[in-house]
Length: 599
Ligand code: ADP
Ligand code: ASP
Ligand code: MG
Image (cartoon, rainbow, N blue to C red):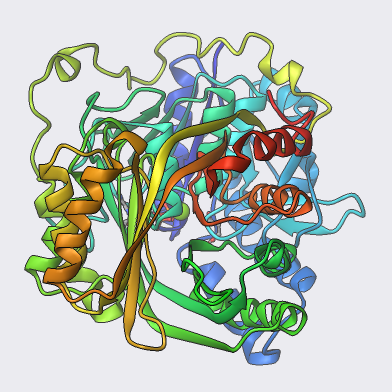
């Protein structure tokens, strides 16, 4: 008999009637021949209420006690859900994370799952019960209650589906699927039939709050198909699986993170090891850093800036000040009035002109781009907070995301199977067995690679006004030159930004003539270049939340005295650009540093 995991989010269990409705869905699945595990979130806004209560008592409540407190929300829903199933004439038993045996590390409020025991759940399922699991929580080695981070019930659900070899994990929520962007922000957003793990992983970590990003790491790692659907209707929703909706569509979705903060360290000595000092301290505090931009150094000094979620700014500043005391920095400044707008798509890795389309859409609205970072399947821009929504709308429109994908052969191909009860689930081929004994969320890398085919161009002293990036990349794109990595710093002390990007080395001369022409036209200070750079990439799953990857790369390179010129991070890859002559040495260092972690 196949197992199905159903997860009901907060709004889907917000009152007794909704809980009864959810219980009916679980019973229906059982009656059609499944064993059913239900994962529940706290009712309505209960988690927020608990957090507010704690803050009334303590302005920085101890994390352990926050977990004690927050985990109660899910326990309430679980007990009520079990009662609802019983009231409808069926059998159910509710279990907390600890009762199931969901073991985590001890990072309170952001714990990672290490292992899950299936015995108790399986025994209950075998005797005809619906198992109701409290989401979002686990227990550490000392039997302290832990929670998995906001939105973490999705991760509980997918993790249970993985260890139970479930046929599918259904996520019931207050929207009827995954949209091209948050439909509550942009009503013109379109529901997608299907989205790939990689795209969903990026979107979730760039602001698409419909799924907890770590749940997608689990799904990808263990091959769990996820079906996101409405708890209020029976319409099919969105399947999250290994295939994208349409092969080759450059952009599949857009996301915004409105509450970001930028930190800049100005005048950092440009020597190996400084990034390590800074980012290792942030990683120790489990702060997820994004949009790391390092200005190409002048006079032996460089500027390093990056973004963090705004509510983590105080902790991040504490970390940064510690590092600054050691490495020496002229100034630290912050901007709390910024938002990140990103686009994601598997197809952009193979298509030119995606970045310039995004930048042109922003320029046409008069929106100034403060920072840019890109990776293979995403482009992120930082804009002032007031511009976030116009920016999202402009970008969504520019990529025509509201329109049904063209009827390409890929779109006409096999449709996703979303019917409950289809098949016996994915063939895990012993994957769960093989991974036994390792932490379930442990880092897993696919590849470490070296690319020595590119050159680096930097336009320094770019005036801080809309349209420059758009003009640069439009002109370069028109020449048929494929731009790979792009970073743009925010304006420095002189109110000017710098724009760096990599192109195929063979096209450097051509690129430079275009860049110089534009630099003149836009009164940029100068154009600099390195004819040969080495790009080192480490790829795997969930690398951004495993901040340790970038740190290990920095450490390995710093140990060999290698300076990092440029960095880009995504869920799937961390790329660094270094001096071309040191490529082989850098690669060897990374291979040594990640020995034993490669799959
Ligand atoms: P739950 O309580 O069920 O876990 P969440 O509030 O966590 O629900 O997630 C659902 C919400 O995610 C939706 O109401 C929607 O506003 C938001 N959302 C953000 N981005 C997207 C997106 N790309 N597609 C669908 N919903 C999204
Ligand atoms: N109740 C928790 C939260 O609000 C977990 C969840 O809903 O997924 O973050
Ligand atoms: Mg959620």
